[in-house]
Image (cartoon, rainbow, N blue to C red; front, side):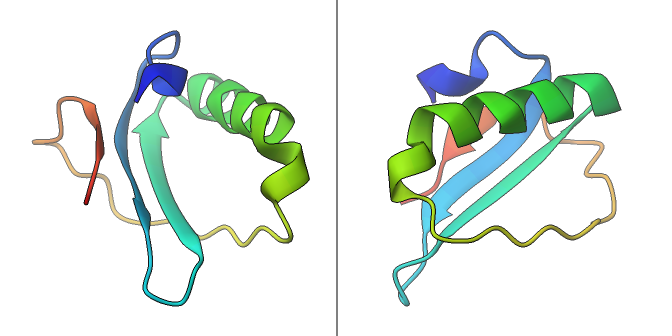
Length: 68
């Protein structure tokens, strides 16, 4: 995902069957915050709500990917 390239984050994004979008990102807190702020600004017209949750880190994750 090109939007993640400027940031030191790994994770995934995918469309869910109910029409929502799942985005998981991990990295240093400042990088994750900057990445999410960038997405919020870029996608503002399409975002109707945001829910955040903390998840366990996935040490083996090495890149940001789009799940299809």
